[in-house]
Structures are given as C-alpha cells and as structure tokens.
Length: 231
Figure 1 (cartoon, rainbow, N blue to C red):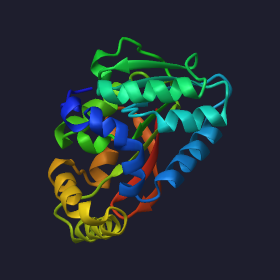
Figure 2: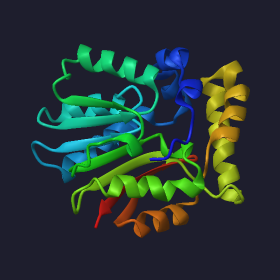
Figure 3: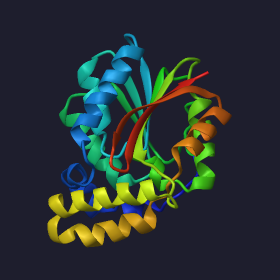
C-alpha cells in the first residue's frame, strides 16, 4: 500500500486519544455503519475466519466483529504508531490480544500474504490519492481467498458534479450541528485533504484488480459503504 500520508502528522498522539470521541460526531451513521459491517461479514463468513483490517485506526471495527464471532481472528494494519498504541490498549482491555495481531505500517510493508477470508477498509480510502487507489485495491486483492469479501466505508463522489456539491453541503450542515464552533475549521481541513473518486471509477478500479459483484449497500450524504467480492 502506498505511503500516502504522514500518519504522525495527521494522526498524532493528541488526535489518537481524541479520535474515538471525535469521529462519531464527524461521520453520520457511524455506529450504524459498524452494525452493517457485522451484517455483511456475518452472512459471508464461517467459524475460524481470518480478517485483514486495513487502516485499522483504534480498532473499533475489530472490537465490533470480535464480539459478533469469538472464533474470528484479525490482522490490523495501521501506519500511525500513536493510533496503534490506543488500539492495543482497547484490544487488551477487551481481552482480545490472542486474536489480534498488529502491523505498524502499510500493506506494502506487511509480510503476511494471507490468504485471508475477508478484508475491511473502514474510513481510510479517502486518504489515498486517486491515482493510487487501484494499487491499494490490488494489494488487498492479492491477499484474499477467492470469493472473499472486501467491505469498505468512505466518502466518495465526483468533485465536479452538482450531486457531490449537494452531498458535501449536507455533510457540512451535519458538522454544524455536531461540531458547533469547530465545524468551519474541520470542514476546511477535510475539503483540502480528502481524495474523492466517483462511484463508477471506483467500481472500474476494483474490477481491474480482480473484484466483482461490487454492491453499494449504504448511502448517507457524501458517504457510501460497499462490499466487493474477490473473483
């Protein structure tokens, strides 16, 4: 996976501590999205499944999935050392250390080639520049078993379209309600740092590296959620 951001700038020690309080306010349907993640993988996976978690952050998705099935194990990949430090504490507190292994880095430096039964990429693909997204999808695909699902959640859209402008305005209105006086600063930051790709372009990129049956199962404002199956 390309080194697309400096994680210690964007997700430094202060941000890693505040992340789990901040993100549910920033992302609409944050809790519901994790429930949908469980629903998707609960249908697709059996006992003893091994899941690759790309951009694991503080491991909220790991905690959610681990609670659903006590036989699943996880490899959590996260480039920010401070975020991994918080994640380790949460995993240890939940008594899950024997089920979760961590890699501080990117997919490009991960020695574990799988194959995995599934992968997740929750709220991370928007940090990847458009011209590097296909390479990240390919890095994930080559580590998955045939018919394994990849579940993704992130903001998406064609920045030149009226539809995207309306979705972004809806997100800004959401921030005004949840972040109050911080909304303008946060919106300006995300507008400058996030990398948007149209839904059709994303489907083409996924198909080009071996994914098929790309299905969008959730939409809210500028955010979408998809499941793509490794062919």
